[in-house]
Image 1: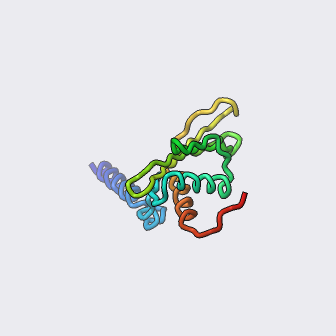
Image 2: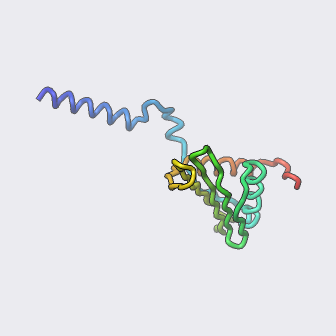
Length: 146
């Protein structure tokens, strides 16, 4: 009986610590919203073109697909390491107030460098890209010259 009591208390403490986000900055954890989309007042084609500029000039991505008619951007695969790579797919669609942009990261890993398998990317990469893109669009920095 006494052993069950201590087991119950131990499990309760573990549960409370895991729910409270122990070991993490609680305020940052609570306030951080992981977004995979953004809304803009720009027209869809304008948002698509500004996003292409951002990806090519500021993130140094090479694009394998840029289709203004479908509102689609797909980057080429980027090697993160010998055994990991990723690519970004962005969709831009018309919205009531302008346009909406969604981002998706595909991650793959390989043990031999030839056969690749999909891995879950989470939302952190998409959220980070969306936050940077929103900052870029809001800034009044001069546009790069070609």
